[in-house]
Amino acid sequence: MAINTIEAAQIFMKALDQQMIEGATSGWMEANAGRVKYSGGSTVKIPTISTSGLADYDREAGYNQGSVSLTYQSKTMTKDRGRQFLLDRMEVDESNFIANATAVMSEFQRTQIIPEVDAYRYSKIYALAKNKSEYTPAASTIVTTLNKDITAVYDEAGATDLVITMSYKVADILDTNEKFNRYLNVSNFKQGNVDLTVKTFNGIPVIRVPSARMKTEYIFNDGKTEGQTSGGFAPTENASQINWIICPRSVLIALSKTDNFKIFDPDVNQKADAWLIQYRKFHDLWIKDNDQSLVRVSATPAPKKTDPVPEENGEEQT
Image (cartoon, rainbow, N blue to C red):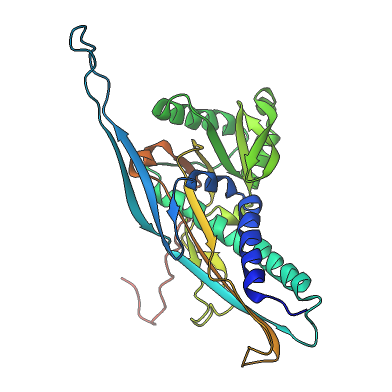
């Protein structure tokens, strides 16, 4: 039976989007995009609701009229990434194409796309956050420093559900700290359709992230420039390590969409006797202007640049 490539592409798109939400350490941020309007392509509309404040109640006139404003701000998903792959007809026939293509795309997303999307989101949070501090993690000060940052967010945001995102290396320092035991517990953390069991600090879930994904700045290779043809991403020369990000769960709005997923069978593909798979991913992260002060980021001090050694020119220095 011939494969309906359109139906197969739609199945892949839904499965890959779900894998992204459940597999990325930042996948929980996509729950905040529920009211975002998306109709394909790179443009989204983010709703903002504003109301007037309280007024005095008048026993004769009754209530003062209030106002409610619902506006949508158009945003563009700035990351527009893609790749295409060939699966040779001799190695993949119609009976096992779905199984093989699923394995290839799932591995591609797990090892390449999810780490890149995570890295972009954390570096974007660092760029947008209003409250940033420098700190070199140490066992003797980590509990006090972390508590201080948590208190600062509570003081700004009030009683709300916080989330701590922390690199594995910093979390390891915390785990081995004796003072941490009094704050330690475990809890369920909902991400997509998956319930994760995570450690908590003072009742706040701590999401642990590979350190390579928590840098302040990255280069996202274009796949064309010399030295970037392999694609992927890498931290910039001046990037610092992010220790942790603390914020209310509701303020980070992330969205990723597998768009325009295409499959061409070998009889249609004119360039090779192979199945052609074309994959395109739009994604981005936003923090509303009035929420940026609710995000607190701790990073290690920026790496110091080494001054170049002057070349000897044979002249005596005076």
